[in-house]
Length: 293
Image (cartoon, rainbow, N blue to C red; front, side):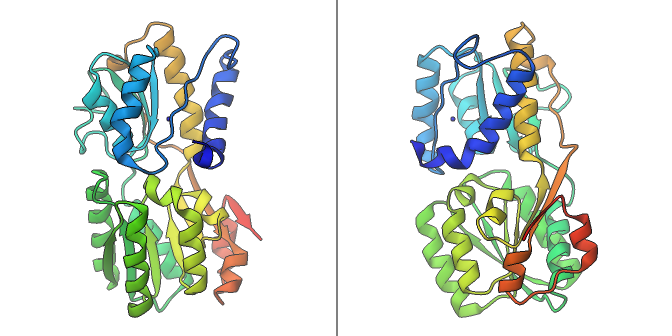
């Protein structure tokens, strides 16, 4: 699915285990889980997938689009349950959400205008917002749709949107240097495992630069980010257990429609807001699912 990432994924793997437990599965007793971590390094996927196929697992569970694509390239028969896949149809994983039609199914994180909502939230907190930097990863096919959303929303709001391609951890240095020089008003971070993996480093930088930011993951806000808005990844990981259970009991992935998110989470860090000298409108605090103080 090393240990450096184990803590990061614990809440998501924990949610998946909770889901299994509710269905009567207990790790080590009647189900064995083989874990593999890519630590935000996508080039590791083919090796990790090959190891799981060699281990003769009954079903693979992946998080994110690049991991799902790696499994699809490696096997057309082993069942795959995808979690938090951005745009399964647009990225060529499946022909349709209702009828995935091969060995893969699962849960999509696609929702219309997510990036627009994130920019709106930034605008509410920084009313003078006119220049936003966006971190994306060109190795993540899902970002084509996300970037389109962001550019459309920015244009409508009269915001200059500048993008930095972060394919691996090392690419952050150049992006940080550019931000120090350009001094944008805020940072928008797209959903990607590379950003999840580097959350500590990125959030320390935004704090030093006094840079308001919005992203897709609660974990980044817990690491000192300002706010996150997106589908509930915990909920998706928990629901993945339902798919695993159905497949173990004989269902074919091809016949299990891919779910779209029904639960969204908005998290705000008041401690960070204070450090950035920002006043958060009470209306937003009331809307938040979680407030870090």
